[in-house]
Image: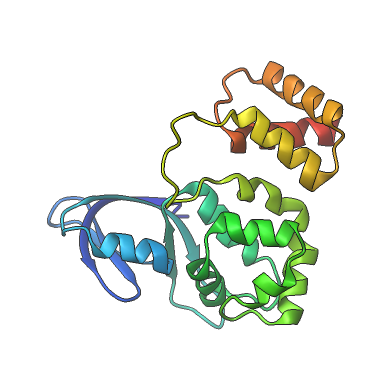
Length: 209
């Protein structure tokens, strides 16, 4: 199973990119990208170093393997979460992720915002409701992903506060309960350094607690 590709940008198209893995006699992999990522790569010269996290999709209806690429591992994981929803295939999932950012989609799911979801390409009201029903419990951590276009803040936000706010506002934790869960997670793994990893560790502890 291919999970990431690292190589040189060989060419771009309206669907994605071709990445050359190996030397000049290596293999060129065609990778489909969300529109926002595609626009980013379109501005890069051939030969640029590329690393993409990959979701390989193949089915009876689509026997030819398709590679879908993402800049961040959690974006790839979110794409695969969307595929767990009935009536959503790879093309629709990619269209959804080409419309607005992953944090915005995840927030709409957590907030039960059917209006935002059904405004996305390929998503009607019934499918929007399915997405909320099937993914709401797993979407919160994706809402913590940093926006690509957001400038770096002069004063970094404490990732522990980000997670605490998410636990309280979106998952119904009491403030003290959230704080205790975060402290316990940090004791179990003192090397946690970002909101996404802390959120996962809190949920693991809560599940087994």
